[in-house]
Length: 80
Image (cartoon, rainbow, N blue to C red):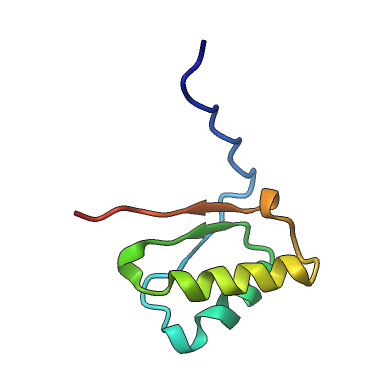
């Protein structure tokens, strides 16, 4: 019996879009545009302070049919 879920496969495209230093005022649109331009690997972290805006951009991209959630590989980090 396994006590963990297997990790999803990594996207074949190694291109990653990072949200470090992306301001809250533009982050939703930057996220949307990154997905629109083909990014599927998104690098986030709580410490970046823009998680809500990234989420809004992702939600809008999914709503507009640019991708599905399963198309995206989202990385986050914990700081202590």
